[in-house]
Image (cartoon, rainbow, N blue to C red; front, side):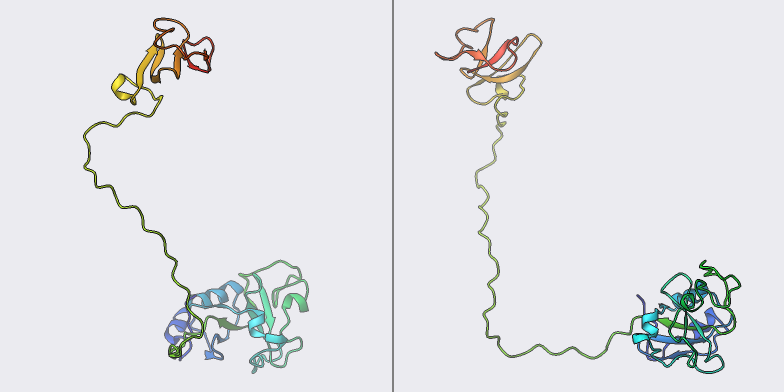
Length: 254
């Protein structure tokens, strides 16, 4: 998240450009800014003001670590009843008056079930766009600025443990140095073909009527009937032409 917490806190020009009625701006910690008295502000309007400065509404945990206001609470005119919008819910407000009873308690807890200060409806409905009455104050939270201090220099002392050797992998095989050939490679065994030149050594491109041509090998592929079914495309002694569809012309020697 973008930080608005520099050495001078909020940019006064930016803040007053967003909201001309800010009455007080004070950097109260590394990551919390007190944006002053905000009469008649809604929860959503307060969240927008913080967002436009690069921050967010604070949480109850940030404003009340350990259940106590980290800054002692809001003092002054409204020190007995001061409500601060927080990001614990869509319309949650925290009692933050310096001398208020119930400091660091939620309005929805103190005046259950109503979450909204000075509301006319005593119900649990969130009204984040409804303005509060005159005693509302705003705190914004964000990331502290990065440190400009240099990091520690690396140590010059040797370690007492050996470092692990890097993982090594065997070298890959050198590429072939054979000259490229212009001869076509043979088709895979048993693949489709148009003529014998597309078949591997020892295979022939054979088919039949309404049977696609394939690369076939004698004594492995066989004909069940037809021309040369007994000699050239028969099977070795002790084998028969079977396999596949028994009604098909071509089979395999088994």
